[in-house]
Image (tube, rainbow, N blue to C red; front, side, top):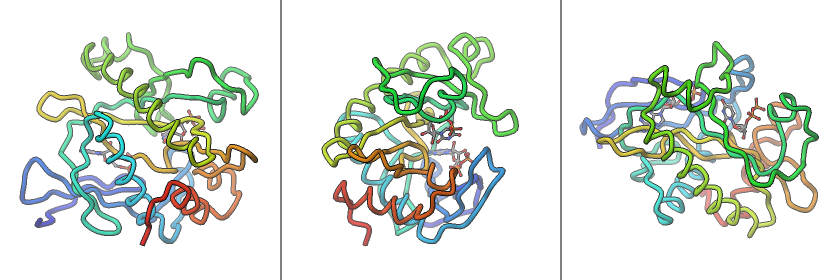
Length: 237
Ligand code: ADP
Ligand code: UDP
C-alpha cells in the first residue's frame, strides 16, 4: 500500500491518500487536544494506543453488523480505512451524566440516564460544536433525512454492544461520540473510537479512565488508557 500526500491534518490524526482512490491511511499522532483545540500537548504513545484500541473496537462493531470504514491496521500508528464523505455532525449517546450535559441542564455528574440520551452537535471548533437537532440538519443540508435516522439507530446499536463490553471488564461506558460518513451512498461509521472520544469510569471506584484525565489535569493519562486496553484484553505490543 503506497502512502500518498497528506490531505487532512486534524487535531489528533492525519489522513493520507493511497494508490487506491477509495482508501485512506488514518494516522494517529501523539497530539492531544482539549477545549476545541485551545490546549494541545504531546502524550508519548497515545497515537499507538488509540490506533490499536480503535482497531479492536471497530472489529468488534463490524462483527456485530455495524458498517465501519476500518479495513485493517497497517502499523502501530496507522490504519487503512475506506474514504468517506464525512457528515459534519457528532452523534453523542450518554448512559451517565457528565461533561457538557451537567453544565447545560444543571444535572449532577454520575446520575444514571434512563433511557440513554442521544444528541447531535455540529462539528465546528470555531463555534465550539453547538448542539443541533434534526430540523437544523435537514434545513441546512448537513445530512439527508434517512441518514439522520440511520445515524441514530447505529449510534444506539453501538451502545448496546459497547456498554456490555466495558461492563464485562468492570468499567462503565459513560458517554461517547461517533462520526459517520457516506461510502458509495452507504452510511458508515468513521473516525475513531478510543478513550479520547468517550468517557469510561471504573465501575467500582468511578475513577476516570478517559480524556477527562487530560482535560482535568488528573495525570497518568496514557497509563490509564493502557489499563482500559489491558482490561479489555487488547494486546498493545
Ligand atoms: P478533528 O477533526 O477533531 O480535528 P482528528 O484529528 O481526529 O480530529 O481529524 C481526523 C479527521 O478525519 C476528522 O475531520 C474526521 O472527520 C476525518 N475522518 C475520519 N475518518 C475519515 C474517513 N474514513 N474518510 C474521510 N475523513 C475521515
Ligand atoms: N466528544 C468528543 N469530541 C468533541 C466533543 C465531545 O469526542 O468534540 C466526546 C467526549 O469525549 C465525551 C462525549 O463526546 O465522551 C460527550 O462530550 P460532552 O458533550 O460532554 O462535551 P465535553 O465535556 O467534552 O466538552
